[in-house]
Length: 229
Image 1 (cartoon, rainbow, N blue to C red):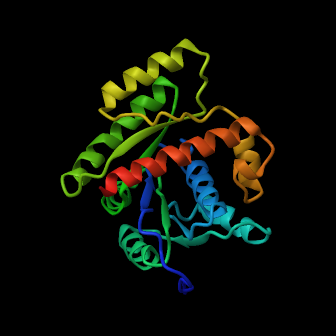
Image 2: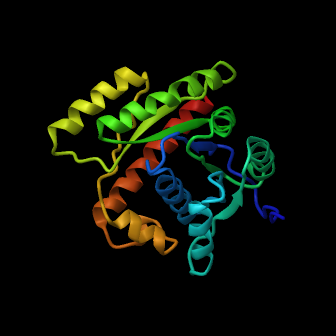
Image 3: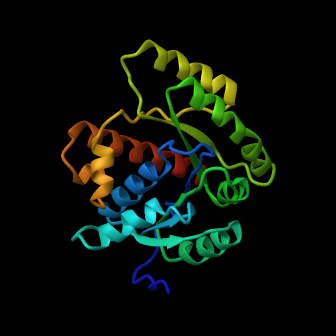
């Protein structure tokens, strides 16, 4: 049972889906960091972990609940029907709702895109990852035929100094037909270390990672406000 909100929900914040059919792309890392970050800014945040039974985001939430940190409501959904029901219940009680979607389950991903106001596709800078992500495009198009949810690539484990990363990011946008977020998350051990402790990188010890996350959250908030107008 979810607790009722004790104040007015901020309607300027919306639903963000983190989607990727390829495993190991960093969905849960991005979803948990965004959820925790917005919670530290005073938002009422819910995170739905759809990658069951693996439940990485749910495990992060359980660890976080033992710490004296800004609370994030955690829910799980094993099917697209459960996702729709959980989102319906939680949306009215929270300012921000993050959906951590599973790999290889197109039905849940499609439902998440339709529910969301903006979706992020985590992508590492490797040719194999770009090829694998092409399988996601038909699901995105099928969902956007129902609702025109904006979908953007979020580059993860990005190595800014390498020529391959720069070239691949341009080619991926063309091949996948998706624009990229301006913010890019570097290849940093802080993300794994923070997750293991139920934290975000802004609550950990890597200043560069903290700056990246703050930039991503700011960019995301601006895009959500644009989507509302």
